[in-house]
Amino acid sequence: MSTGSLKAEAGIAGGDSAAGLPIAAAATVSRARTVWASWRGLVYQLAGIILAGLALLVWLLTADLSAIELRTLAPAALWVYTLEHLQLTLLAAVIVLVIAIPLGIALTRKPLRFLTAPVLAIANIGQAAPAVGVVVLLALWVGFSFWAATLSLVLYAVLPVLRNTMIGLDQVDARLVEAGRGMGMSATAVLFRVELPLAVPVMLSGVRTALVLLVGTAALATFINGGGLGILITTGVNLSLTTVLVTGALLVALLALLIDWVGRVVEHVARPKGL
Image 1 (cartoon, rainbow, N blue to C red):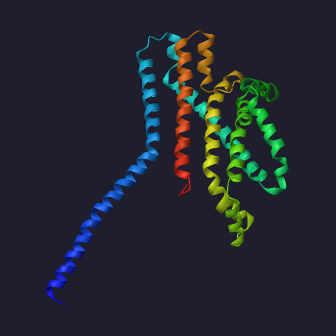
Image 2 (image 1 turned 135 degrees about the vertical axis):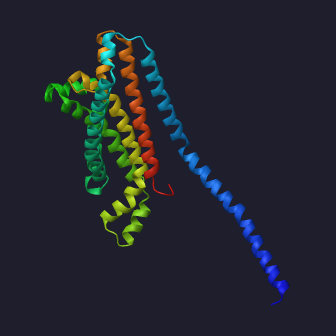
Image 3 (image 1 turned 90 degrees about the vertical axis):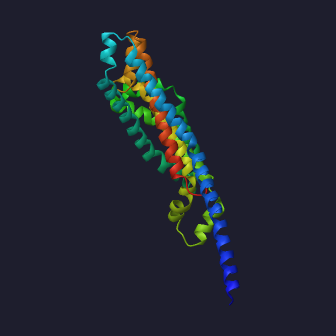
């Protein structure tokens, strides 16, 4: 091969390499923009929550508080109330998940489909009833305690998880299920490797909705000695302490927004690739 031919081939190869660099850079930029677009709303939501929390903190530090308000809104007291609120919410959420997800899966199987309507009707009663009524009635039955509040929260939040589990599984393309069975997979393998992964986005949406409901409803636990941030609200109302009342309401709202943000992050991370 001549020297000229070698130089020509080297020139072509070099040109291809040079042309490939801008293409690779453009692909990297495109991927970065896609990632930012998918996370942008979450970043803005978290920034809004942090700014609102800082605004509340500045307001409390600069407000002219009475001696009762200073004791009620002391950092140690607020921390205890917040932990109690989180304990109520997370314990009720775990119980809801343990009950609702297996029940939703069972009700989408052929042998138990006839029970779908009655079970959903019972779950609807729990959520349609006024939250205060559910809390008080259960307290009269079980006793005024933390566990009575937890049980009432479970009854109130089981419907979104149950319903979304059933909807998510029912929306899976039947042809995918048949294809899995045709490949020799058992019904259990198809459930865990095909149906549940595809139903995850809808199921997680129900879990996030239930968590937000639990955070808001947990404020009513104070009426039956269940603790939580609702103590600030009832104290503010009973003693006409507007600052305490507003602080309790804002803390419950911020906690609900934070839980919603965490749920959205989990949805984003757990969503199967390609969906």
